[in-house]
Length: 275
Image 1 (cartoon, one colour):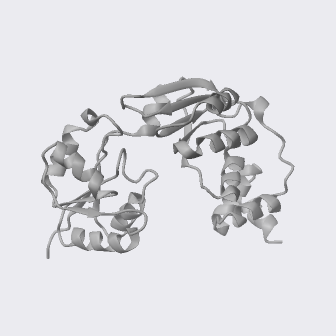
Image 2 (image 1 turned 90 degrees about the vertical axis):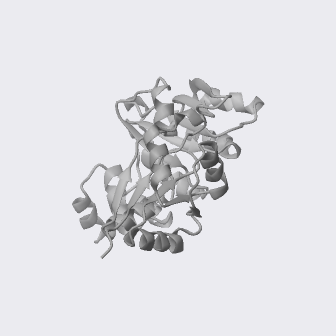
């Protein structure tokens, strides 16, 4: 019986190619196969470091079928490196599903440390780093966005979001509507030639982007809620629960989130909702 292979989670540079680690390069040189979000993009990276390896695509639109294919290869003894276009695999990335699949089937997962846009932005933001919540990209669907922003608006932890340039203005408007006028650091094009940090408030950012067209990829670091920013939530537990359900949240998670919003236990929330 063949020994199973391992899945290596290999972070790639978020901009500056010098940020790749020696360990990542060594793994990429020794694995049997590289699974990549965009094989054309990753081929450029491998060519830059003169690494010749077979590439196979693994992304949001093929993850179910391709995940099963990759799992079989791993069970058959092949070692596979998983890379995303930039940064840490499985963060805002379908690699999360492949990791779960490997764990469920007894395949070893080996995480490598390396570049990550969220933490790179956070440590240079001037916003509290002692506790934070990573939200990633907000959904496009307005109802789902509202549910998430309603949920996090009273969190005391610093909030971290990713955003694309064409959605930035709308996201800042939503921040103002749901979070109020908080301290904000807008991080753009991290580690690249035009890297930029804007230290401002949400209201000030909205004024800036009335005159300036957003360009590049953004990380938004938003100050957590201070006590004076908390607005009274007069919604009933049932109303909050129903909003989560309408947004597509499954019933167990909806109960958990609604209970947290009302500051009661899950058991208590369940007892109220089942009546």
